[in-house]
Length: 280
Image: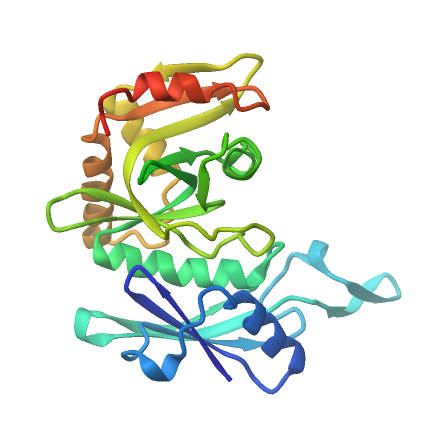
């Protein structure tokens, strides 16, 4: 069984084996994004799931079942999706094979995110730890570490705005240099992302939970550092680092980066509107 994701021009194929649970997981994951692999150009990445107990993972904390004998671990069963795949963009100097553990609360998310981050690096795009919402055909990005409140802002505190992404946002640039935020499937299976799939970026906010709502300007050096801290970039070659830095520089040059300190209510939106007045 093949299930295809098309995310901002990147084609990722999930190949489910005969295991019924694998097929069900892949089908569920691509429910909003499935396009039918046979109707599109060859995939940039082909991912095959494998159920291999404990493959390549020394961290026993994720074990669902451990068998002990004379105080020693003799068997570990892991209920995790483990994946291998092939990068197929040979014509772009981008090809090879990989193997990954499927750790985390949603292992498919982790595997697909890894592949998309590689494709973004190669294409001069960014995959950011960020949620995003849209208002008046523009996107607002909220960057932060896990638990900072990205999903909370996008889903619970959006003040009637439409969620674009809840965990990771792809940022690309059109021909005239406009920065465009694109929806991704990551973390959205429990949320409704039925709005537009992309929008030009009007504001970028580095979020911190606090006792009051406050917006602070961020200078270009600090903005660069904060965006890099939330950029998913798995490789470190000179060429990919340069592409990442160039893309981050384009975002900083927008001049719309702020720190957002917020309480758990939506009272910060008037401050955002005031900070960005006249930019849209």
